[in-house]
Structure formats: structure tokens, C-alpha cells
Image (tube, rainbow, N blue to C red; front, side):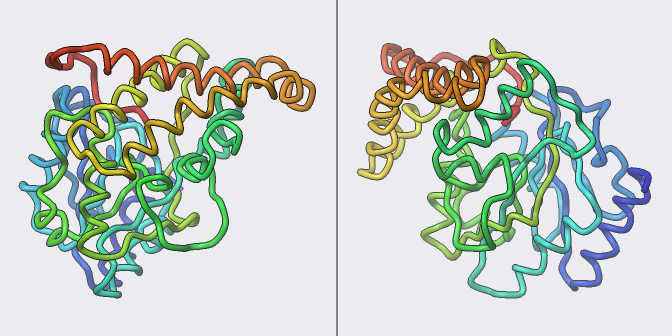
Length: 292
């Protein structure tokens, strides 16, 4: 099915469920877009360009008249059935957000370092329960920021506004803090069927760079919301370094490149925490929207 036809059908499915849905995209540039969000024949779609994802998403959410907001990135692809999988949960008034994984497209052929990167992203050893962000895991269930991801997240508009939207000035991890706030309002759901496809980083250098940002974002999230839960998540990054003793076993079972990606994840994450920790003041960010 073409991207235009797929998106039109998705919009029809959402309308059939009786809820108004709008797609909100934070893009490095207003156009061009990649993926199926480029043709939004069936669903209202707003694209906000810039380099501050939280502000862009908040601005996009303010532009649309919808009961449910679907936040995706500008390289996200989805299939017609994806929308219905998400929207159906909002008939339960206690549900405020639904998310699913962002695996690579089944049509993507990954080799070399990219294959090693995805082996890490989908590995329990590298990500623990958070691997559910990148590969479908288990059955639909209660979710939280450890398994939900900002590049494929549906939120009830009323709850989004009550939570204050995405916290501006925080990057990355802006969606993590939003989800913590949403959890105080209602239920969050993880549905492995609600999958939107995104391509993993092509090289280990690119991947480790992103992981360092996530580590820095975790520390900045803790500074903004100093709860025991967030402190434990920071501490867990340091504890994970002890898994390096399993490197030979990982290499034997999965190959040296995959082992490097998996165990390098922990070191890159902690490096990001330490880098953010060492900064006296946070300067304005100049990088583009999150590519989670």
C-alpha cells in the first residue's frame, strides 16, 4: 500500500473509532518529511521545525483541535492498523497515554555495525525492560517511562494540557518527565502491537553519541524532578558497568561487534551522566530533534 493510501486508511480507522486524532511532528526542518507522515490525507498533521523538540511539540499540540495527540518523529513510518491499535485504548476514560515500540521496518536489511546497534537496542543486557521501546515485547500492559518512547506516543489532549505539556528546556528525556506527570493523572499503556518503524543508527559512533545524550538527559531530569525513583535510575547506570564482566560471554554468543555495542551502551550512558554532572550551567542546545 502506498504511503498516501496507508495514511488515508489510518485516518478512516481513527474516525471510525469516534475520536479526533492529530499527528504532531517535531522536525529539524518544516519540510521535507520522510516516512508516511509526509502525506496526512486521513489524519490532521502539524509539523513544527526547529531544534527544541519539547517546544516544537507543545506548539504543534496547541495548533490542532483533537481529542488525542500522536507524537512521532519526522522519520517515523506506520501502517494503517497502527492508529486503531492506539486509539482503541482511549475509550477507557482512565487511560491518558498509549505507546508502543519503534523497531526497524521489516523491509530494512541491516548489516555490520547497524545490525550490532539493533542487537544492543533490543537486548535485555543493554536496556533491561526498556528494550520494549525498540522491539515488541510481551502483551499489552501498564506502561511507564521505562518502556514508552516519545517518538511513538499517543496522549489524551486534556491530560497533556493538565500535565503542562513537554517540559521545555530539557533534552533529551523531556518525554520521560512528561510521562511521570501523566502517570499522576491516569493510566499509561504499553501495547506492542502499536508499532511505528524507525531506522536504527547506522554506525556505533552515531549510536554511542545518542546514548551519551540520553545519559545526560537522565541527570538533567533528576535535577529537575528530584525523586527517589529518578535517583535510582541514575544510580542504575553506574551499577550496569559491572556487566562488563560478561563481555567474553556476550561476544561468544552474539559476536564481538554486538558485544561491543551492548556493553558500550553502559559506558556511553554513564559518560553522558558524568558530562552533564560536571556542567555548572546548562547552555542552549544546538542539536536537532531527538532520534530515539
